[in-house]
Structures are given as structure tokens and as C-alpha cells.
Length: 441
Image 1 (tube, rainbow, N blue to C red):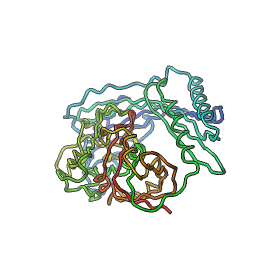
Image 2: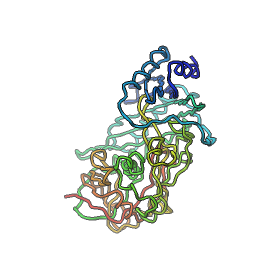
Image 3: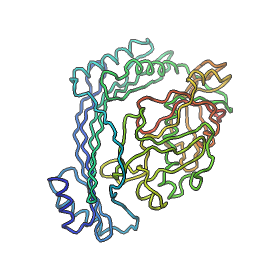
Image 4: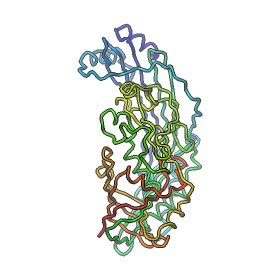
């Protein structure tokens, strides 16, 4: 059945406005262990979500097949009848202008499964051969995905976007003098031959062996350099600060501070659906609203919140094209496209060299439980290195970093130029904070 026919059928049943959100996802996952294929899974998924306005209320239903459209539409109507909430919902009228975005198509279809297995075997062997302290490659995985998303509604919107990519991830265990440590890394991209196996090998081995024999650190206040992956995790944990949904619920400290200096002078944060570094270029959000580049923070000044149609209506402004679903069956929430901290002019080595005595953080744990996006507070366990006179002196572990995200971004002294060149969703370069509280021995 054509999607236009589903809309016509829904209207005949009394639905005044309808929206179809359709997604197909085809992919594969393989895992190597000790040189042999350990796991192989193919996936093929189809989902359709229907929203419809019936007697002034918005109903919703979801299915994984088109075999019972009449039943699906009846569910939409019944759910609308049963709805008790007065929360407003919207179907986009398609009045905006869409950017012409080049869709990158992954080339993994040109390569056989044997090619992909041999790639994993090469990676696994290179990690094992790098250092005698590497005792095991705990995982060596390859994945590929091809996703097509369509939005069709009764107001004339008919949109489609495609995303395809492949990725490889590896992790290893190092052992020496009865101690063990782990390292991991990965890459994601469109071109199979350009997946950075050598970088993955290097990072896995350095992380695993570099923290063997890690000691403790005295409790105190230190300058801290966050590796870009850790800085990204911290930024990701506090993305909701910039959400109109959080502002509506009074769950962000930034509410009412538009146009106010909140962060340090060197802090500029963008949400850019078209940024070159990102894997995903997004012409429209999951409500069909055109996406565009937004400056959330400029030289420390908080400029704006991200909005979907509902939060934009609440604050009497326009949607910023940031209404997204976590799955076909889920409701639309406010989320970023490609949100990132603007890189600085320093190399990563410059950050380390600037410290007489400080901490380089390579890994944090417990961020999910240890970060409060409402207050901005965080308290997380970390691993890394003690830096003396600008050089890494020794590995340290089991120390706790405490602070406040907003206060920390007022203490950023240097920002590196090493923003991830192929990131997904959220990214930050490495940066140096003047001082943070460290709880050690």
C-alpha cells in the first residue's frame, strides 16, 4: 500500500491530520575472537509510526508491518479517544526551506564478508603483536548499518533521508606483575578501506599498557587536562542544559539567561547539522522541520535553547529543527544534531607542556550516576596520568574528580585543536581546566 493511500484511508475514518514516520534499517555485526569468527548477525528492520488528530486529540500507534493498516489506524483513533493529557502536539506544515545536503553512501557493499573477517584478523594480530604485555584482545567487532527515514504527512510533507556507515571497535587486556589493565578504541566512516586500523591499534595498546602499575594521587586541587574522548563524555552528560524541554520543566540552570555571560570567554558551542566533521548530516528533524546551524554559546554568552515544535510553541518561538525520536515507536524529544565545543588553537601537547604539576584524565567511570544535569554537579571516578614539568610522569587510578560543569567551563584555560574528525552527535576537543578538586589517597 502506498503511504498516500494510508493517509487517505485515515482521513476517511475521521482523522483530520496524519503523519507517517517510516524507517528501515539493514545491517550486520560480526565479532572475532582468537582469530576466528565468533559472532555473526544480520538485521533487517521496518517500522511505521502513525500520528493522527481525532476530535482535537492526537492519537498514536506503531507497527512493524503494513499488513494490518486498518487495525493500525483504528488504534490511532482509539488512543486519541482514551487520551487524558492536554499536552499540545503538532504536525508540521512543511513551510520551511530545506538545505541540500549531500548524502554519503558507505561502500561496505563492495567488500565480501571474508574481506571484513580478514580486516578484523589483521587488527587483532597487530594489537597482540604490539607489546608482550598484551595478553588478550577481548573484543574485535565490525558493524555496518544502512538506515532510511521517511516522513509523510497530510499537510504535504514528503521527506526522505539516508544514512549508511561502517564501524570497527577493539579492546585489549594487558598484564604485568599480577596487575591487569584494559584499553579500547574504534573508528566509524563511509569508506571501508579508510577505517583507521593503525590508530585503533596504537590507542588500544597505549591505553592498556600505559596504566599498568598505576598508583594513587594525593587529594588536592590540580590543573586538569581532559582527553577529547573524556571531554566529549562530559559535554554529552550536560547536553540537556541547552534543551527547551528542560527549560519548560525548569530543569536547567540556563533558563532565563539568554544573552547572559554564563561561561568563559573562550567557550563557543554550536549545534550544526551540516558540520564537516560529523558522520551524520541532517537536513530535517524527526518532525520534518528543516535543520539549520545554531550558536548556543558564543564567547561565553548563552544565546538560545534547542526546540522541537512543542517547546517552541510553549516559549512562543520557532522550532530549531531539534525534534528527534530515540526509536520509531518513541515520542519526539528535544535533542542535538551535531553539538560541539569549538576547537582552540593549541595542540594537545601544548596542553600537557603548560602544566608544572597536574592531572591528565584518560578515562572516567560512573558518569551516568555521577552527573546531575539539573545542578551541573559531577563526581566521577577517573584514570589517567600525573604530569610533572610538562611531561607524563606516572599512571594514576582510582581517584575522583568533583566539580560543576558550568563553573568548569569558566575555568577552561586552553582548548586543543583536536576535535574528532568523524564524530556522531556530540564532540569536544581536549581542554585544560585551571583547577579541579581531586580526591585521592
